[in-house]
Image (cartoon, rainbow, N blue to C red; front, side):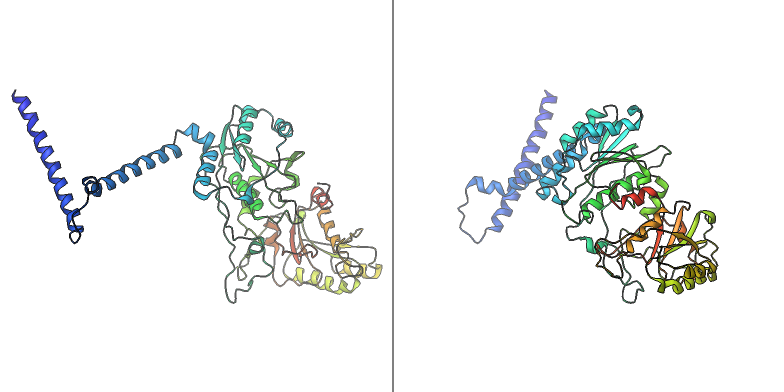
Length: 447
């Protein structure tokens, strides 16, 4: 009995405390409406303290549901994180960004043929999937059932970002008014999971300027970044599903393992890829500061050369001779190679040889977009530079340029280009080139 009485007393105290709390809240409600007639119904009076409690409960329930949804067990997260993210994007933003959507139907037979080139599929522990929808992810799981499939997440680029902002016609190179800086593109989420294969579905607009697409560029940079972030020594392959070839500056045709239809499989040099990603994304920023200190580079002198070209214009012979002299005065001992066509006379060739140039005769290539007898009618002859395959690296300079200090360190830079938005002008006063017959063939559409 004593125990029963003791248990009753706390209940009386508890009910008493609740009653006191109710009275205090009711008093606050009365104070707020003291200047008004007292005609509020009982249920309305109680709502002044019930509604905040109900709201709090709803917030807790919704928050708990979202947390459970977003942070479910690891295996499920790896398999469905992409679809979950897509759901969240649609719920919050009202839909996917149309710039990133690819309307290309995946030919899974072609994908299977390409995957077979990888060898034993059991060796591929992780497969990263970027820009695929839910049904396509299911197909991937069917093709490689023993691998862990990771639906990769990538925030969209700002909708105000255009190709012109990445590749402007002009920047303040001398930094007189401002320091040029490229706009930033969101980077993919860093993963701790090993990825042996990264597959990406690229959008491709049926337009003339299909390659000048911010979303397409962004997806390829994200894939390259994920591959470059690999810590181990295991090989990494990149697979692109696209009608048009991927960016050749990032993924060279020398690294192309196989292509079947719209499926492209690459095995990139991860170290080279890391170097490329250190460069600005476009011509919006200088890759080397204008006042940068002089750099020391040793490299492989026997496999590196300076090159220029003369075609249909002997008036540049004197300029080429002066350019050769300036290179030697800068302290460089690399080979000097000059490409000339049949219009350059024996007399002029003799002068070029005495200046130190090694002469290579070429068949010139006409620019199909140039007018007849225009200054740029034959400037596509510069494509021949990629046929100098007895060298690993070429620094091309126009024949009317002078070298004021040693620039041999450019041989240590990866082949890259950053051109203005002009389809008919060959923006190439100075270029770092990695000769390759494969690259040369790509210029006429055979790649």
